[in-house]
Length: 197
Ligand code: URA
Figure (cartoon, rainbow, N blue to C red):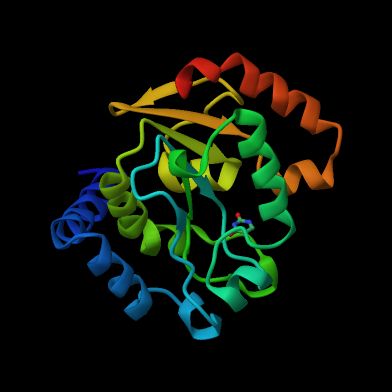
Protein backbone atom coordinates (compact mmCIF):
# COMPACT_ATOMS: atom_id res chain seq x y z
CA UNK A 1 0.00 0.00 0.00
CA UNK A 2 1.43 3.46 -0.85
CA UNK A 3 2.52 5.36 2.29
CA UNK A 4 0.16 8.28 1.60
CA UNK A 5 -2.86 5.96 1.58
CA UNK A 6 -1.78 4.23 4.79
CA UNK A 7 -1.23 7.61 6.52
CA UNK A 8 -4.67 8.84 5.52
CA UNK A 9 -6.25 5.65 6.86
CA UNK A 10 -4.38 6.13 10.17
CA UNK A 11 -5.54 9.79 10.45
CA UNK A 12 -9.09 8.76 9.69
CA UNK A 13 -9.11 5.89 12.21
CA UNK A 14 -7.77 8.18 14.97
CA UNK A 15 -10.18 10.95 13.94
CA UNK A 16 -13.11 8.52 14.14
CA UNK A 17 -12.22 7.59 17.73
CA UNK A 18 -12.16 11.30 18.57
CA UNK A 19 -15.46 11.98 16.81
CA UNK A 20 -17.11 9.13 18.69
CA UNK A 21 -15.87 10.65 21.96
CA UNK A 22 -17.39 14.09 21.15
CA UNK A 23 -16.16 17.71 20.90
CA UNK A 24 -15.26 18.13 24.57
CA UNK A 25 -13.18 14.96 24.46
CA UNK A 26 -11.40 16.34 21.38
CA UNK A 27 -10.62 19.55 23.31
CA UNK A 28 -9.21 17.49 26.20
CA UNK A 29 -7.16 15.33 23.83
CA UNK A 30 -5.70 18.46 22.18
CA UNK A 31 -4.74 19.86 25.59
CA UNK A 32 -3.07 16.57 26.59
CA UNK A 33 -1.34 16.00 23.22
CA UNK A 34 2.41 15.33 23.06
CA UNK A 35 2.47 13.80 19.56
CA UNK A 36 4.95 16.35 18.15
CA UNK A 37 7.62 18.64 19.62
CA UNK A 38 5.52 21.82 19.23
CA UNK A 39 3.86 21.15 22.61
CA UNK A 40 7.23 21.63 24.34
CA UNK A 41 7.33 25.36 23.60
CA UNK A 42 3.60 26.16 23.51
CA UNK A 43 2.08 28.27 26.30
CA UNK A 44 -1.49 27.31 25.39
CA UNK A 45 -3.12 24.92 22.94
CA UNK A 46 -5.26 26.89 20.49
CA UNK A 47 -8.33 24.82 19.75
CA UNK A 48 -10.77 27.00 17.84
CA UNK A 49 -13.37 29.75 18.12
CA UNK A 50 -16.83 30.49 16.83
CA UNK A 51 -20.06 28.64 16.27
CA UNK A 52 -20.42 24.93 17.07
CA UNK A 53 -22.79 24.67 14.09
CA UNK A 54 -21.03 26.83 11.48
CA UNK A 55 -22.09 27.13 7.86
CA UNK A 56 -18.52 28.14 7.07
CA UNK A 57 -15.41 26.74 8.73
CA UNK A 58 -12.17 28.63 8.12
CA UNK A 59 -8.92 26.74 8.45
CA UNK A 60 -5.96 28.98 9.23
CA UNK A 61 -2.32 28.08 9.54
CA UNK A 62 -0.90 28.07 13.07
CA UNK A 63 -1.16 30.08 16.28
CA UNK A 64 1.09 33.14 16.48
CA UNK A 65 2.39 34.93 19.59
CA UNK A 66 -0.94 36.47 20.64
CA UNK A 67 -2.83 33.23 20.05
CA UNK A 68 -0.24 31.25 22.04
CA UNK A 69 -0.57 33.67 24.96
CA UNK A 70 -4.37 33.72 24.99
CA UNK A 71 -5.25 30.24 23.68
CA UNK A 72 -7.61 31.83 21.12
CA UNK A 73 -7.13 31.63 17.33
CA UNK A 74 -6.90 34.80 15.26
CA UNK A 75 -6.91 37.19 18.22
CA UNK A 76 -4.12 39.47 16.89
CA UNK A 77 -3.59 41.49 13.69
CA UNK A 78 -4.48 38.62 11.36
CA UNK A 79 -7.66 38.17 13.40
CA UNK A 80 -8.71 41.79 12.75
CA UNK A 81 -8.18 41.13 9.04
CA UNK A 82 -10.20 37.90 9.26
CA UNK A 83 -13.01 39.85 10.97
CA UNK A 84 -13.04 42.30 8.03
CA UNK A 85 -13.22 39.38 5.61
CA UNK A 86 -16.10 37.77 7.53
CA UNK A 87 -17.92 41.11 7.51
CA UNK A 88 -17.37 41.47 3.75
CA UNK A 89 -18.77 37.97 3.30
CA UNK A 90 -21.85 39.00 5.31
CA UNK A 91 -21.53 36.20 7.87
CA UNK A 92 -23.05 36.59 11.31
CA UNK A 93 -21.53 35.16 14.49
CA UNK A 94 -23.58 31.97 14.40
CA UNK A 95 -22.49 31.26 10.81
CA UNK A 96 -18.76 30.67 11.18
CA UNK A 97 -15.90 29.16 13.12
CA UNK A 98 -12.13 29.06 12.74
CA UNK A 99 -9.52 26.43 13.57
CA UNK A 100 -5.86 26.00 12.68
CA UNK A 101 -3.87 23.19 11.03
CA UNK A 102 -1.77 22.82 14.20
CA UNK A 103 -2.90 23.68 17.72
CA UNK A 104 0.52 24.71 19.11
CA UNK A 105 2.59 27.72 18.02
CA UNK A 106 5.63 26.85 15.90
CA UNK A 107 8.74 28.58 17.32
CA UNK A 108 9.44 32.00 15.73
CA UNK A 109 6.21 31.63 13.73
CA UNK A 110 7.90 29.34 11.20
CA UNK A 111 5.66 27.27 8.91
CA UNK A 112 4.49 24.00 10.47
CA UNK A 113 6.53 21.01 9.26
CA UNK A 114 4.88 18.15 7.36
CA UNK A 115 5.33 15.85 10.37
CA UNK A 116 3.65 18.43 12.64
CA UNK A 117 0.73 18.83 10.23
CA UNK A 118 0.36 15.06 10.20
CA UNK A 119 0.52 14.74 13.99
CA UNK A 120 -2.31 17.24 14.31
CA UNK A 121 -4.37 15.97 11.36
CA UNK A 122 -6.65 13.64 13.36
CA UNK A 123 -7.71 16.68 15.44
CA UNK A 124 -8.35 18.70 12.29
CA UNK A 125 -10.45 15.91 10.75
CA UNK A 126 -12.37 15.27 13.98
CA UNK A 127 -13.15 19.00 14.41
CA UNK A 128 -14.38 19.18 10.80
CA UNK A 129 -16.65 16.15 11.25
CA UNK A 130 -18.06 17.40 14.54
CA UNK A 131 -18.56 20.99 13.38
CA UNK A 132 -20.01 19.68 10.09
CA UNK A 133 -19.79 22.88 7.99
CA UNK A 134 -21.40 23.32 4.57
CA UNK A 135 -18.21 24.95 3.34
CA UNK A 136 -14.56 24.82 4.35
CA UNK A 137 -12.47 27.87 3.49
CA UNK A 138 -8.77 27.07 3.41
CA UNK A 139 -6.88 30.20 4.33
CA UNK A 140 -3.75 29.84 2.22
CA UNK A 141 -1.45 27.07 1.09
CA UNK A 142 -0.57 25.60 4.49
CA UNK A 143 -4.25 24.89 5.18
CA UNK A 144 -4.45 23.20 1.78
CA UNK A 145 -1.29 21.17 2.52
CA UNK A 146 -2.78 20.00 5.80
CA UNK A 147 -6.32 19.25 4.63
CA UNK A 148 -5.84 17.91 1.09
CA UNK A 149 -2.09 17.49 0.43
CA UNK A 150 -2.79 15.54 -2.75
CA UNK A 151 -4.64 18.52 -4.34
CA UNK A 152 -3.60 21.86 -5.79
CA UNK A 153 -6.67 24.06 -5.67
CA UNK A 154 -7.07 27.26 -7.70
CA UNK A 155 -7.55 30.40 -5.63
CA UNK A 156 -11.25 31.10 -5.33
CA UNK A 157 -12.41 28.07 -7.32
CA UNK A 158 -14.57 25.76 -5.19
CA UNK A 159 -13.94 22.04 -5.34
CA UNK A 160 -15.65 18.98 -4.01
CA UNK A 161 -13.06 17.08 -1.95
CA UNK A 162 -14.49 13.70 -1.00
CA UNK A 163 -17.99 15.10 -0.64
CA UNK A 164 -16.96 18.32 1.13
CA UNK A 165 -17.12 21.71 -0.60
CA UNK A 166 -13.78 23.48 -0.21
CA UNK A 167 -12.64 26.93 -1.29
CA UNK A 168 -9.10 28.32 -1.06
CA UNK A 169 -8.75 32.03 -0.32
CA UNK A 170 -5.82 34.22 0.71
CA UNK A 171 -4.73 34.04 4.34
CA UNK A 172 -5.59 37.28 6.19
CA UNK A 173 -1.88 37.81 6.99
CA UNK A 174 -1.12 37.72 3.24
CA UNK A 175 -3.59 40.60 2.82
CA UNK A 176 -1.76 42.63 5.47
CA UNK A 177 1.55 41.84 3.79
CA UNK A 178 0.32 42.69 0.26
CA UNK A 179 -2.50 45.22 0.55
CA UNK A 180 -3.26 45.08 -3.18
CA UNK A 181 -4.52 41.50 -2.72
CA UNK A 182 -7.59 42.74 -0.83
CA UNK A 183 -9.29 43.71 -4.12
CA UNK A 184 -8.60 40.26 -5.58
CA UNK A 185 -9.85 38.58 -2.39
CA UNK A 186 -13.09 40.59 -2.63
CA UNK A 187 -13.54 39.47 -6.24
CA UNK A 188 -13.01 35.83 -5.24
CA UNK A 189 -15.54 36.23 -2.41
CA UNK A 190 -18.09 37.95 -4.67
CA UNK A 191 -17.79 35.14 -7.22
CA UNK A 192 -18.59 32.52 -4.58
CA UNK A 193 -21.35 34.14 -2.48
CA UNK A 194 -23.80 31.43 -3.54
CA UNK A 195 -21.85 28.95 -1.41
CA UNK A 196 -22.93 30.54 1.89
CA UNK A 197 -25.77 32.99 1.17
N1 URA B 1 -2.61 33.05 11.77
C1 URA B 1 -3.16 31.82 11.72
O1 URA B 1 -3.07 31.13 10.72
N2 URA B 1 -3.82 31.40 12.78
C2 URA B 1 -3.97 32.11 13.88
O2 URA B 1 -4.63 31.64 14.82
C3 URA B 1 -3.39 33.39 13.91
C4 URA B 1 -2.71 33.84 12.84
